[in-house]
Image (cartoon, rainbow, N blue to C red):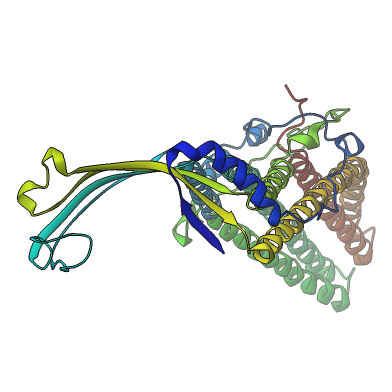
Length: 473
C-alpha cells in the first residue's frame, strides 16, 4: 500500500533523505534479462539507424496504369489507414506520458448550504446556524520525479511511437510489393490466356488441314477425332487463365481500397519485366539495417528496456510538490474579501512500505517482456538474412533458367513450324504435329512462368533489403 504523508515545505530536503533511507525496506529484485540482441556485425546490419527514403521504384516498369494503382493503394489501402490510426494513438500516449512532467493546475469552485455544528471548529454565532458556504481554490501538483520513473515512462512511450511509425513505413513498403506481386500475377494470367488463344487458333487450323487430308485420302477418322479433341483442350486452358485474370483484378481492387466498380477499369499490363529492378553486381553489406521491420523491432527493445527501468524506479519514493490558493468563506457575499483568502504549499511523499509483492511481480514481468522483445528482434533479423539469401538465389537461378527457356522456345517454335508445313504438304502424320505443338505450348508456358518468377524474386528481394538496392547515404 502507499501512504500519503504531508509536511511543511521547510523539511523538503530532510524528507528526501528519510525517503531514501526508508525505501530500503523494499528493494528491486536481482532479476536480470537473459537474452541479448544479435551483434550487428555478425548479421550484416551495419550502422544505419533509419529506414531508406521511399523511392518510386515501381516506375521502372514503365506502366502508367501500375503507377496509378500504387498511388491509389498508398492513399486508400485499409491496412495503411489502420497503421496511421495506430501512429496517432501512439503519439497521444507520448503526450500522456509527458504531461506529469509539467506542473498541473486545476481550479475548483463549490458552494453549499449547510448547518454548522455548535461545538466544532467554528464557534458561535456561526456555530449552530445554517449558512451558505463557498470556496474557490486553484490547486497545483508537480511530480518531481527524483528517481526517474516518469522519465523512463516517457522514453518507453517515445520508443513505442517510433516502432509504430516504422511499422507504418514497413506497411507502405509491403503494400507496394503486394500490389506489384498481384499485378505480376495479372500479367502472367493474361500471357497464359494469350498462349491458350494462340494454341486454340493453331489447333483449329490443324483441324481444318486434317479435314482436307481426309478428303485427299491421306488421313483417317482417327486423326480427325484427335484433332477435334485438341480444340476444346485449348479452350479449357484459356478459360482457366481468364479465371486467374479475374481473381487478380479482384485482389488489385481490394488493395487500392475499391470494390467491384473498379474491375472494368483495370486493363492489360504493359510491364518491362526483363529490364525493371535490375540487381547490382554487388549489394552493399548494410542494406538489412534499413529494413523498417528490423528498426521497429529494435525500437520495441528500447521501449521494453525503458519499461523495466520504470518498474525499478517504482521501488523508490514518489515526491510531489503541491500548493493551493483561493478563497473560503461562510456567506457568499463576502467570499472574495481579502481576509478570506487562503493558500498553502508543501511536499508530499509516497513510500512503498508494504507493497513488495506487487512491485516485484511488475519488475519481473517487465524483465520478461524485455527478453521477449529481444527474442522478437533476433527472430526478425535472422528471418531477414534468410529472405535476402533466398531471393538472391532465386534471382540468380531464374536468370540462367530464362536463357535456357528462351533457347528452348525458339527451337520448339521452329520444330513446330517445320512439322506444320510437312503435315500440310502430306509429308508427315498428325502425331508429329501434335508432338511439336505440345512442345511449343509447354515451352511458351515455361518461358512465361520463369519470367514471372524472376520478376517476383526481384520484387521480393527489394522488400527483403528495405526498399532499394542503393548504398545508404
